[in-house]
Amino acid sequence: MKLFKFLQKEKPESPQPKPESVGDSQPVEGPEQGAAPLAEPPEAEPTSEGGSEMLAGPAALSAAAETARIEAAAPEAAPGPQSKAAIPTVPAAPQSEETAPPSEAATSTATAPRHSWLYRFLNFLLGRDSRVGRIMRPFLRWTAAIVGLFALGLLAGYLLLYQPAQRSLDAATTQVAQQKAAIGDMQAQINGLQSTLTASNQAIQAAQDSLKKAEARNSLLVLINDVANARTALAQKDGAKVMAILDQARTDFDAIQPYLAANKKELADELNGRLETVRSVLVRDPAQAQIDLDSLYNALQAANDLLFG
Image 1 (cartoon, one colour):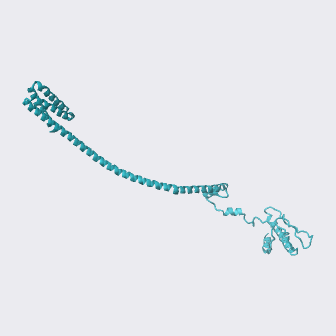
Image 2 (cartoon, rainbow, N blue to C red):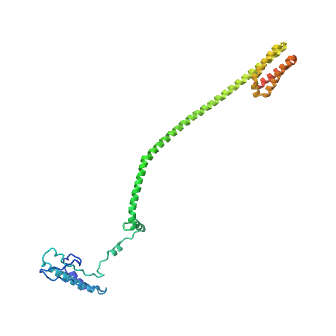
Image 3 (cartoon, rainbow, N blue to C red):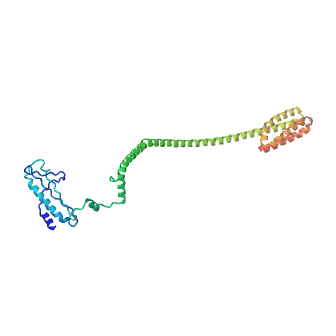
């Protein structure tokens, strides 16, 4: 075996013909027509592991000899378009397990980096080599396109509809605030005028009360003057004049009676009774009428002091 490896290293490399499948191989045409086709080298039969290296040596030597013979016969063959296709394919000698190169699967397994669980999960979910990824990738593209269009619609609505409406609302809110401020100022003015009006009404009411009081006092003083004149006429024994004065006193008492009834109802009833007594007694008893006139005069003076004193 060592000798075979040494011979393989020392043997010069010869140009190998283009490999073709066994089914396409054709016999090499010799310089003369009707020449016998070249015999194909016998294939090495598979043996056990122990004898594989021993069988590989003769098979390789026979294959090399056949290749040299074919190359020597090639110049003598007539040139033609099928000369290259006529060269049979020489099967390569099987290599032993010790000299065979490592397979791609083993190399990729030995050199492939170990990824994290997140990478494996994303590769399973979105990778091109997974069934779920082949379904999810178009779905995510369409979803992203729909979401993008929806976002563009929201942006357009915000710029074209929301912002103008918001500006209009802000302007309206500002105007409402200004109107409310103006209404507040006007309401303050109205409140001030209302207070002034109330004070004026109170002053008017006080003036009216004062006027009524002055008129009542004036009427009371006139009544007192009428009673004094009646006393004088009765002292002069002028009955007709006394009756005329008492009639006038009745009229003046009627003018003051509402004020007396509102403030001193008992006093008003007492004065009215005394005046009627004087009128009734004057005809039948002038002396008693004089006494009643004096009593009425004193009562009127007391009422004057009580109400207006």
